[in-house]
Amino acid sequence: MFQPVNDPIKPHSQVTSCIQIPGFDAMVAKGDISTIQVFFERIAQEIYNTRKKNYTWGFRVIEPEFHNFSDRIILVSKLYKEENLADLNSVIFKLFTEFNNIILSTALHMHIPIQGVIRIGDTYRGTVKSRKPALVSGKDPLILSDLFKVFSIGEIFPNGFSDGMIPAVDMPYHFGESFCQSLEELSILESIGIFMPIEQTKDKVTDVTILSNMIVETEIDGKKIFVCNWKEWMSERSDCSSENIIAFAEAEAGNAGSPFAKRWQSLINYSAHL
Image 1 (cartoon, one colour):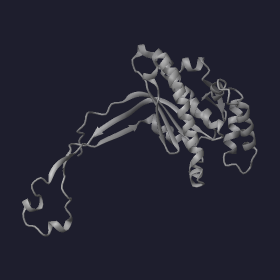
Image 2: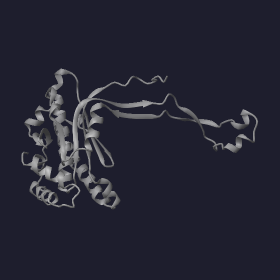
Image 3: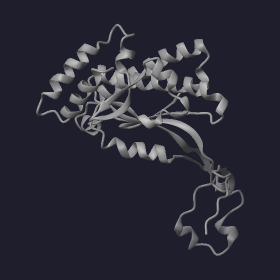
Image 4: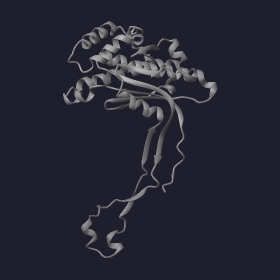
């Protein structure tokens, strides 16, 4: 039976956002790489602008981590389990939601559909190492035919053959029930936006964000749910117009040939309550 050789993997509390770009593969297949690049560039610039503001307020240390995996974007922020740090967790979630709104609003401004799920819960993340490093030759590598030409260990491995060291392998891991559940739900989302199940408003983590109107309660297909308020974020940007986005969504929703017509219609429906 295999036994662990590293320190035990322990859970911690985290808020995770799993975001997907529907139609990403089709964009790549069509060679529409420049659109994808501009999208990432704009996100990077907006994150930079937000980071400058966060530095002013001293919030850099709790800024969400941003990971980009092809058609998936993952945002993560660690939460504190101590009961007396509820206020700090609220601030962490507020900044986390701001980053989600940056991604969503930038995508909508470029008429790129975005769907995502936010979940709070225990996750496991970190790195394990291979058991030990190994010796490696600094000489020319041996080949199989060499082994048939010699008859002694000394001839196979001459002096100075092993004069280097392969470092241990770092194997990162990132998993957990809330993380896995979000990835599973991405494929069944029928609306454009970044959503959080209403039961995730536990421990007052989201109170500050709801009061600041950055995330609001609405209905998607008759089900109450919290949604990132992209309109609120765009109201601070003179170069963005929510009216233009809604107009594009209406055109797409009425286009029978649009693969995301239903999702754009759902965006129109819930955006009326933002």
